[in-house]
Image 1: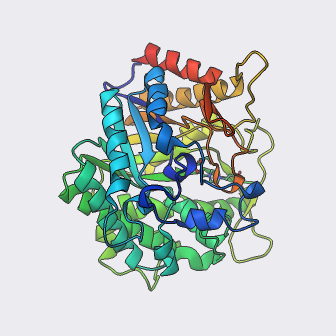
Image 2: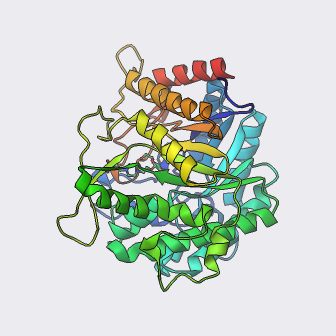
Length: 432
Ligand code: GBH
């Protein structure tokens, strides 16, 4: 069957991973600046100070998107550029950058899809408690309003949060991402306050005339290692998947959040404010077994029977299809967008000048096929964004993993489209 009319093929990035220009034009520090500049936190001491220098090279990057023929570009707006202190006055130069970017995209016929929070919390807000504090939710809604005030007439889609689960788990529970806290199960308020911020932002954006508004979640299908481990898999699913979707689409939290003192009864109404779409990021399934010890009700154990990406993540397109089916059966879903899907490999430029990333082509092709099966089964999916346009700063792994369709030489900032770029370009041309 064909794709729905107006299906959007796109590419995605995030501010801290590509922009660089960390202290330019009045940008304030974020938790990721602090974290990356703390020795031992990011592999080889890499930071986002320069990254892909996209802050200056955005016209070239839009030209690369034009060459791909994508209909949409998902980027994120750095809160510390717009409101360097996280609250209070706007930094006009920060907003100007996104104004230029959005105008450039529209001139190239590419629909802008803006994420408001892709993990770069202004450091002053973290110093006041970060997402562990209720006040941060209100600050986020205010920032969202300010961004929409400037850009709502030209931005097609607004994504409030990117993967709040990763912020809660990696940032506040396990400490491997900024802000590096190790609160374990005590990190749950960071989930609630992000979701509250999401709900407040939905209303602020609506009030400011934003068109399509949604939330992007990360989903990892939970596999039990043995039938005995099913309770562990269910617990992982509750903490890592349902915790961030049930309250938004069902208006209630799973058991794991029941009776939490920081949840006020009226919060769930705010969190369940109607959204226009749900963003789905999918990378891999997770296998769980009973926890031997420690505070968590599950342990993660390796999946070894599938090929893996450069990150060691198993490649299982079928798990992507089952994820889409299970979302469809559990919820009465709004339209879905696949807001991220992709893989890293240690791509190198060959002596012939070509980056032969045939494994990425296979990965994308297989996952897009899985998505198309879901569409044929009646699941309303309206777009697919490949992660990522460019090789970029892969958080605690620094610049080692390469997720791009375009190779970046970090010495020269030279961009070299990989074979997968040509494949995606031809694929989009053939599908539109
Ligand atoms: C996304 O997060 C981010 O939105 C994006 O910024 C990032 O660059 C991109 O993905 C690639 O990482 O080690 O087997 O236990 C992805 C979230 C959560 C996916 C952790 C993989 C660990 C798998 N990731 N998960 S495993």
